Length: 291
Image (cartoon, rainbow, N blue to C red; front, side, top):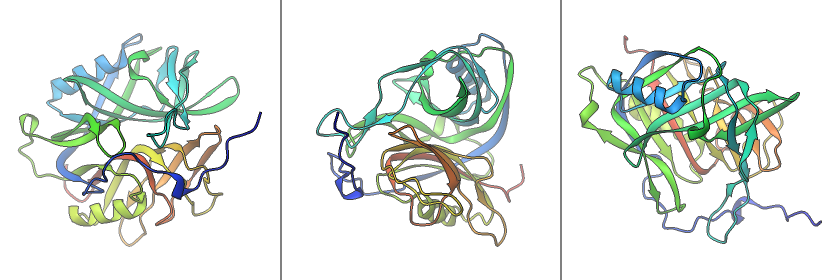
């Protein structure tokens, strides 16, 4: 069987009108949260209930170390029509696994709690990175997860005219505002917005000299400081722990990713070399403001 021809960045086109704001940022309050989960708990139900109790409009969570019962996931793939720039693989099923690294963006879809989750895990002696289907997730055992609860802004799913995907968008959330000063912002990058350059510009607008970065998304390739580049232009990524800037050191954005061939990649992103494919959903949180 003949393999599909390689694609170039110039071949990647989105069907709708380009958004005017390529890196919309909305300030908010982001404070540390910690959640104890029972074994067998439906994950999204548990996360949403906790966020409701804490008065959060959204959350960004670290699910690394979480043991999941059997779950479904998808991988990045070529588009199945002549309009979208990319698509998802057929649904795959895991027999259950402990997540090595995972980022969850908790937000809203159709008036209900929803989550966008990218995770890395090992199964059958093989490493995987995929987009987990949230409605299939349940804990395999009791666990504790941590992250940041967001007040004053939220991620809410909506049709994106440019890509014709339903994506998280940033929205104000006056119902769950904080009386404390804003110390963070959330953003959803538009296609081709460079991950490193966008974070640099948004953090400057936040006026925080030291900051952390959390999130996930998709890239049209990336070059890394000390490892081989990710040349596949359809990928899914997560931002690894330790991303951000402190003092006079340069911005550090370590990521892990998987391309449409299933090849795994990781490294610290070089400036100007990591264009967004569809979107990247990020929390940028200043660390100089007292808790």
